[in-house]
Image (spheres, rainbow, N blue to C red):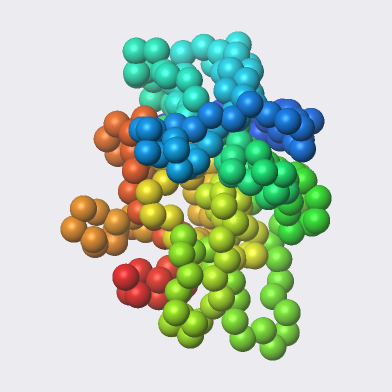
Length: 271
């Protein structure tokens, strides 16, 4: 149990969808334009051009925070670009990633996302992920709440594999040896896109090495609503069923594997 009633979760889901759609619209407006880009991390990271952030990321996050503060002024807000004042203590926390897949976005590569995740006492209870490209060949929002169905713009997004298809696709941080597992690897460049595509059935499974909370908080509820499972890896390299984000949410980082149950077990065993 989450401690939130279904009507409360419905209200939160609707707002999460609205926020994801707003972020997606802003990103779409700026897509392809000349943007100011900076790089996070130490000097070596910046010289290598790793972990880019555009001016749009921060601008959109500030906009989303203002909308959330109007509706739920006491809820926590955790985002990549703006520090959380005082750390926050409310049992409900919103994890915002206005552009997930920034490297793709700033390079004009049309595969990125806007992710909104909602946690209750660390448990992912609602997610909304706007994707620039989807199973429907158009932008849109995948969304779900705990105990509710997976939806894409109010429709069932579950895809159906082709007859006779022997090898499906999986999201991998790096290529695997061909034939090592019964699927072919794909890398979208966005954890939120991967989660949405796993939920929709485009990917069987996806593995993430060191995701931040805001990278996956919006996508995990989608995968769970679609009947998938999630595993996290501890410091000793062992995989465990995932139930909640524990510890300091702002600095949370753990390897994850999520997807259909059979594929997840195969992927965990391959480590």
